[in-house]
Structures are given as structure tokens and as C-alpha cells.
Image (spheres, rainbow, N blue to C red):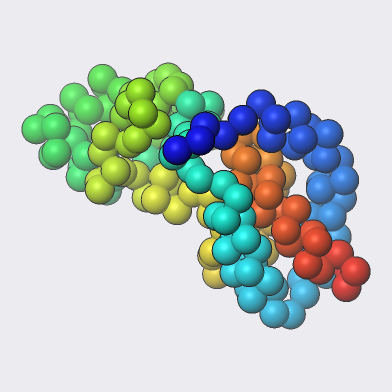
Length: 169
């Protein structure tokens, strides 16, 4: 598997952030009908270009938000109590979210594989949060804009949506 040049995408994201930010702001205001069909097509096109395993930049530079349910499930796997698991690997951030103490993620191995993939946090399972009923909420909350430089797939995804509907906005 060919390694993804994350730095190339990161530079592209920073170059395009202002333009893509304006586009996403327009999109949030317009709330176009049929956006979820466009999202599905953009999602499909994105994964033809990007392979997460050749990247894993999200696991290297970001942390998921853990729910209590996630912690209970994962701690049980390690035969630990909730508190032992929390104390060993987690913390509560300034937003009161439970997150990893450090990055890269402690569960990412040297081959960019998640060692707890089948029981990973729901936030990881849903990342990069493309196909969602609350897609427009994610646009409004700047989820995609904030993830552009962390996730090459997010950059390509937003570019694909922009290409598909910019003329209509």
C-alpha cells in the first residue's frame, strides 16, 4: 500500500482553507435540498482517492471524544475498571469532553492500524463524519473546516462537494 503524502494535503488544506471556509459558510446559509445525495457522491469519490490506513493522521494528531459507554466497553476488554482505564489513558478537557491524554493515540500501531478497532470509540467509528443525517449541523459547527488540515479525506470531501454544487449556491 502506497503511503499517503499527508504533508502535501496539509499544505493544500492551509492554502484552500479561506476559500473552502467561505464555501461552507454559504452552504450553511443556503441549506440546499438534496444535499445528502451530493454528500453520498462526494463520500464515494473521496474514498477512491484516500485510504485511511495509508494516512492515520487523525489518530496521530487528534483525539476522539469517549463516551462512558465507550470507556466501559474498552476497559472491560482490557480487564480494567472504568477508573483504571481513565487514569491510565484519558483526561477531561476544557470542554468537559473525555479524551486521550496524549497523541498519537495509544491504540495506533506502527502499521497505522487500530489495535482496538472492533471496540473503538464511537467517535472513531464515525470519523470523519461524512454520511450523517445532521450533515448541515456539522457544516454549521465548522467540523469539516476544523478537520481540513488533520484529515486529507475531509479536504478532498469538501472539495468534491464544492465542485458538485458551487454553481448552485
